[in-house]
Amino acid sequence: MWYILSWAVWVLRHAFDQTFAPAPRFNVDDDIPDLTGKVVLVTGGNTGIGYEICLTSLRKGAKVYMACRSEEKAREAIHRLRETLSTTTTSDINITYLPLDLSSLSSIHTFAAQFLEKEERLDVLFCNAGVMIPDRREITKEGYDMQFGVNVLGHHVLVGLLKPALTKINTSESNDKNRIIFLSSIGHTLFPPWYTQAFVPSLTVPGPARDGFGSGWPTGGIGLWGLYGHSKMGNILSARWFQKELGDSVVVTACHPGLISTELYRTTPSFLTLFTSPVSKPPSYGALTPLYLGFSPETSTSASGGRYYVPWAREVPGSLDVRARGEEGMRQAEVLDRWVRECVRKWEAESGGRGNL
Ligand SMILES: NC(=O)c1ccc[n+]([C@@H]2O[C@H](COP(=O)([O-])OP(=O)(O)OC[C@H]3O[C@@H](n4cnc5c(N)ncnc54)[C@H](OP(=O)(O)O)[C@@H]3O)[C@@H](O)[C@H]2O)c1
Image (cartoon, rainbow, N blue to C red; front, side):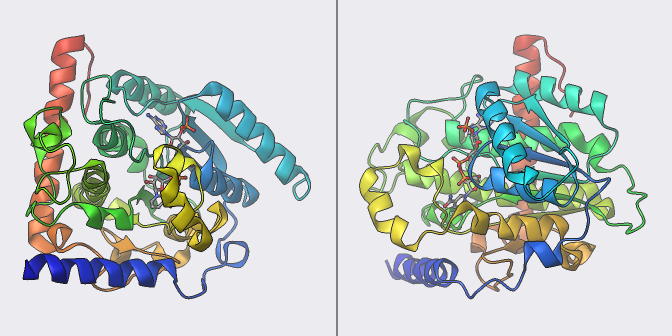
C-alpha cells in the first residue's frame, strides 16, 4: 500500500512538472542547423506531432519520407505542407509518401524494402506513430495487442530492418551521428506498479493476463490505460536496446512530447479531453522535444544515447520509471528484443515471409 502511494506521488509530481514545464529554451528556427542533404523518416507524419516534425524538417531543407497507413491522408497532408511552406520557401519541398501500416509485419517488411531501394542512408528516424486506448478487441494482423503491436513491435521491427541505412557513416561536413527518436510518453508510468518488470510478454496477446481483469484498476489487473503504459514503456526499452546494439554510429533516444491536442485522443472518453484541453499545447509544442533530439547539436553525441527526455527538450533526473532504468532496464530491453525476434520468426514460418532482422 505504502509503495503504491509513493508511486502515485511520484507520478503526480512528474505529471505536474511536465505539464507545466518551464518555457522552452530550444527554438526550432534558431537552434536547428540547415538540414540540406539530410534524409529524415517520420512514421505517422500525416497528422499531429509527426506532421509538425515533417514541417520543420522540410523548412530546414531536409528530404523527408512520410510513412503512414492512409494514402489519402498522406496526400492531403503533403498538400497542406506545400501550401504552408510556399509562403516562406521558393524551391519545391522534397517529400515522399511511402505506405506503412505498423499493425502488419508484412507491410513493415514491404515498406523497409521500398525505402532501402530508394535510399542508402537514413540520417534521422522519428518513431512517432502511435495509438492510444483503441477498443480492447482490436489486435494487429498477427494477433498482438493493438497498442503494443503498433507502438512497440512495429517500430522495433522497422528499426531492425532499416539498420543498414541507419548505420551508414554520415560523411557530411558536420559529421553528425545518425539518430533514432522513439516517441514514448509520461504515460509509461501508467503501467501499474504491481507489474514489477517493465515488459510482460503475456500482456501482448489476448488471453487471461491481458483480458482477465476487464476493469483493470483497482483490481490488480490491467486496463486499457495500463496497456498503453506498457507500450510506452516498451518504446523506452527499444531505445535502450538499439543504443546498445547499434553502438557509437547512432544516437538513440526516447521522449515524452508533452500533453498535446492531437487526434491521439480520438478514442478516449470525451470527459478526458474536457480536463486535458485547458492545459494541452498545440502540436508545434509536441514536436519541440523530438526535434531537439533529432537535430540539435547538443544531442548529437553518444552522451545523449539511450536517454529519456521530457518537455520541453529537457532531461529531468528521476522522470524515468525505475523499472526501465539501469541494469534491470537493460535486461528488460534484451527480453523485449528476443520477444520481437520470436514474433518475426513466427510470422516468417506462418506467412513464408523473410524477416531479415
Ligand atoms: N498527444 C499527446 O498528448 C501525446 C502525449 C504523449 C505521447 N504522445 C505520443 O506521440 C506520438 C504521436 O502522437 P500524436 O499525438 O501526434 O497522435 P496522432 O495525431 O493521433 O498521430 C498518430 C499518428 O500515428 C498514425 N498511426 C496510427 N496507427 C498506425 C498504424 N497502424 N500504422 C501507421 N501509422 C499509424 C496515425 O495515422 P492515422 O492518421 O491514419 O490514424 C497518425 O499519423 C504517439 O506515439 C503518442 O503516443 C502523444
